[in-house]
Length: 169
Image 1 (cartoon, rainbow, N blue to C red):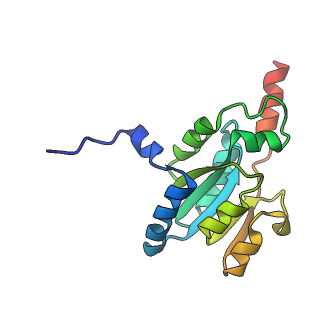
Image 2: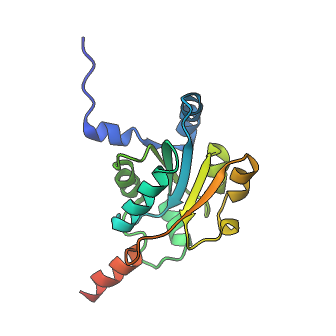
């Protein structure tokens, strides 16, 4: 008997991990010699700037893992009373649907420090609006001989600017 064919949605959903399920896949990816890249964000409204940033992050290695802030974590970041605009499951699904994203994991802490400790990425990526010493987990990655890279944002594309444009009508 033939196994049922996986749907495209099944494939996307298979890229969404819990921290515990990620623990099972990390040794496999390491055995396969993947250069693991990690980045994180809220990704409240997926837009061109996110695609540009995430694709450049993916180019830094062979497997991109994206940490997505939980709904509670986004609220604690103080991005405004209406944020997040989309729930964490929807945001994770959208990021997981990008072909260059290998894994997505939602985290509830204020920073992804513990997630970075768990993943031990080879490359840690953030936007160039940060200094390396401001990036959660930079110390962990550098201590194991990894790299911390800053990526310039695509000018004029941000969730805040889109939100402002929508409110102005």
